[in-house]
Length: 131
Image (cartoon, rainbow, N blue to C red):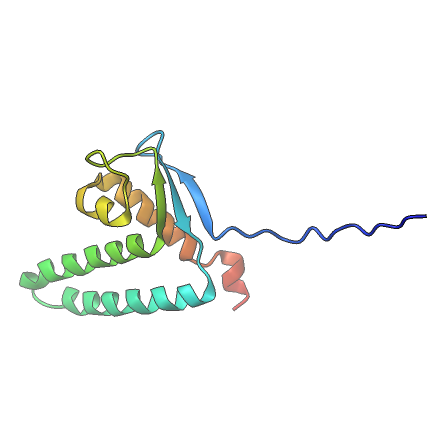
């Protein structure tokens, strides 16, 4: 008699999540899913920029340009960190990268992707309860 043991199925984890663009139909983009180490790295970098931003927001109106710049730099940081790939879009005839999207892509798509990245890195209510 032959006895065979079932192979363990295990768990499959994907380090990226694909999303369909709502602002540009036919465009899909892959976002990095955050790990503990990546969360620490990203939060540290964002913290530094936002602390500067809060300081500038408390300053005079003439410093509003600096505060706006800090906001934009945080968005850029999120894009560079979290965007893995874009499909269904060409920018000036070339395959888009995060850098190309920042410098020549549609701002509405950039905002949508940044919001998606923020959603990926935020803790869910269930995760927050466990802390």
